Length: 334
Ligand code: CP
Image 1 (cartoon, rainbow, N blue to C red):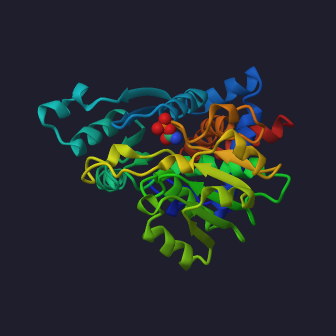
Image 2 (image 1 turned 120 degrees about the vertical axis):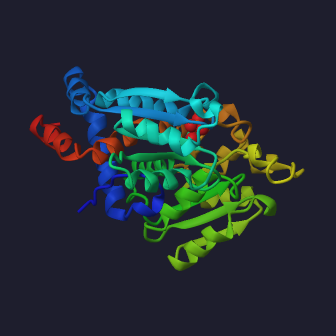
């Protein structure tokens, strides 16, 4: 039975049953949304709710997919993307700013450069007489829980005729140390039996020891390597990431490393399994050659679209509309 959630702060909140349940719900929302009547039904489910999208770090996909997901559920949105346009510029603390949002809105979706900011805000709001759900849409170098949900959803859909996510070999490549999407997804993958994880990166950008400790604790098999080409034929899914050099400054400057060795070239398609997939949380720079985009194994554009459905499912679950949506699905013989 799926546990309900209020805040969505980190991937430690999601157990296996929750992951399967929310992916099932996203599949049904996808089906319902194929018709005008279905879209009208979805848009009636939460049209009494309002959401604040507080994104003080850049975003294209996460912002727009949450925005679209809110629209699908009828939730009205407002946004603050530049703190210079809010009273933070007058010296108001971020905590007071977000507390103010909670007085006008029923949901706060936030992206922030601090690792624990969403958690701190959820804790702060819980102590007020008007707590509203907080969704972490990316926090520093640490976590991106809703990206991890859409990544699991993409893996599950891609391998639905091959037993799902269990037993799959997933290779991560690029800047793994500072990539919050990799860190969140690697943690979630420990919930699936028999998975094998490869981490292909230069030593300076290799996955953090804290994640390795979790893999060991969960008895999830993994391999650390600096040889990307060697893992391509082994993997069922290759998860590419970009260099997260926005953190260079706070880390004391740029490290001069050839990251091009960790990019997926057109010639690598010959090494990839015929039923393997290539994923990327995006945005990309040169980690995947554009010539790869039209190969059916390139899953990263499908991955973006999956983000909208899983976020609809998440918000419907937070506001207890999941059962209503399932009932609509069944009563309309979908
Ligand atoms: N994947 C992701 O978080 O993309 P954006 O930074 O564009 O939101």
